[in-house]
Length: 499
Image (cartoon, rainbow, N blue to C red; front, side, top):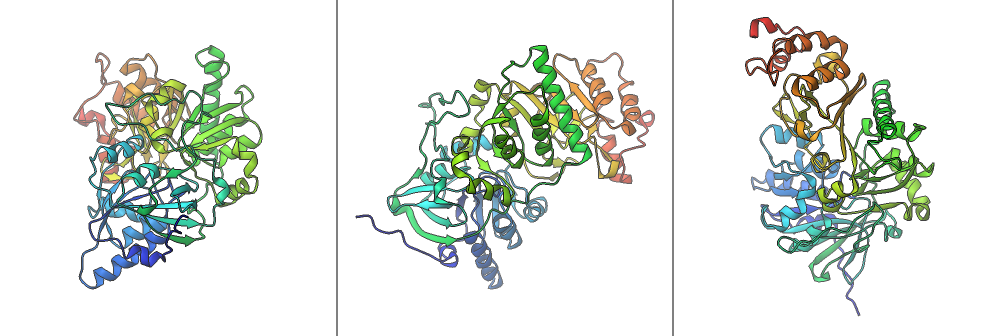
């Protein structure tokens, strides 16, 4: 007969964790991220700091988390090291102030990097579950992330058993870990709906030191209603893909879609769902968000594979209320599989991600503000972009009320090179970069995607290099960024003085 798993309070669980420990957390975005033990851990850190004692831990997650994890620990100055992706304002402040060491990395690589030992020993795995058995079968909740690898590598496991998610989620997950080199084989996913693993994470129950009972919703922030700008970006993406089908460059049956998270991504998916020339399609992506659920309900989306249900709470509840309908239409995987480059290339994904800034040649900055301050991290965009059938980046043409142009001569930080990007799309138009020289790419990006207020200035820069292969001058490449630093506006650069 199995021994029941011990019950702990969140404070009791936090008391087991020591200064210098390394902790892996479940979840992917706030979906599936632990909430109770991390809050208690933050209180423990503040109490020890008040006594003059050190207390910081290493934090390794699937992706971003909620305010009760990244936010609480950052405010308590309790994080020595953080990887990979984060999106919390307090954590971002701690990273940019140099108080928390931050290592940005592609999300598909986190689990294998842990297994290779590159990030050191894992002391703890803290996992949010909707069910756990005395035999060590764990059913995670709305996000998987790195949970399977975290459970296998950690010395000890703490389970947050969250009643806000039904145990009927068993069967929504496909838990699979590849072998490591030199024994790795192909990952046998040939269409988004393929199942290759287990519905549960299986662990030695002796590693589970306790179960903390909770009843808390995911700390997802929801999404804004599409603005005129995001609607137009979405329409431009949908029109571009419809034209690609008409030309024969995209198969008539279409291809699976990957879409990043956020308001632009929601608007893009909405526009694709309404476009009469785009057929019902499938998704193989990392984040399943609100627009996806609407597309499933109306039949425009046949199947969605991802690593998390990053949904507003009302939409997530609607899935739980209709769980049998969605059981055959949604599958949640570890991010090592949802973002796996081998599968991205095999399935021929059309990938749609968001840029912070784009330069003349199609180089993408998706992580840094003015080349210095970390925003969120590279996330999974690189996993998909480099291996896509067709890779698209979207962004509004300007920021800060027009004071910043998203199109610049040279990106202030580079996350995705021009060699991996097929098209740039803003609210003003589409720049198809395929097969174009640097001069041709620069011209089409400026004249199709830049805001009209900046086109004259940007073309004036380009005009200085009529006979070069790459129209660029090191003495002026960041002049628009420097202009903003001095005046608060990128407009008004005097190229003649610089060149």
